[in-house]
Amino acid sequence: MFESVLGVDPGVASLGLAVLTREGADCRIAWWENVRTPADLAEPLRLLRLGEAVRAAIADHAPSSMAMERVMWNRNVTSGMQVARASGVILLAAAEAGLEVEEYGPLEVKMAATGSGTAPKEQVRAALARYGIGEVPKQPDAADAVAVAYCHMQGARLRRAAKEAAAR
Image (cartoon, rainbow, N blue to C red; front, side):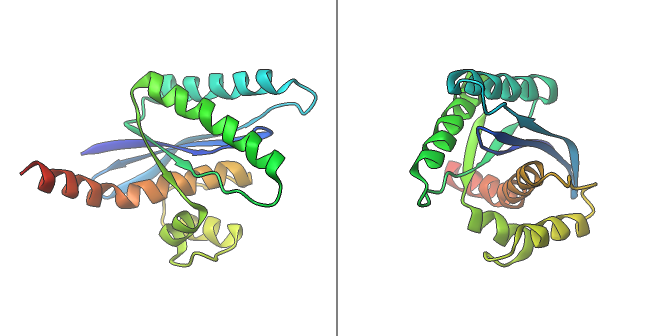
């Protein structure tokens, strides 16, 4: 069975996108991109660019689903709101394309890649590289998008089995 997932690491200044494909047990990085928006551009125009980039990725790569890192609120409420707005634009693009979306917290993503929810980014990147899925991008946001897509792929078989059991 062929499956592809668009992984997304949301952000306004920098958006990570990656497509992972799987046929049988073979999981590969098919494509990745890091989308940057200029800080001096008005936020609505930055969001427009992000939406266009996600729509283009969906049109070009026809993923079967999307996986996105869940917004985590820290002390910086302004930054959290910006990422939340970017996430909304991304979710809208997915809905327009009819894609199912799953969101994963950073802890879940790190656990799927390394077995530890406290792993630093470089350890996650190194673990992904060891899995033989292709060259993991050095750019952190794109590497995070690969990790989110990988996390989704890891749970795909379990989700399918649960759906099939529920349908019986």
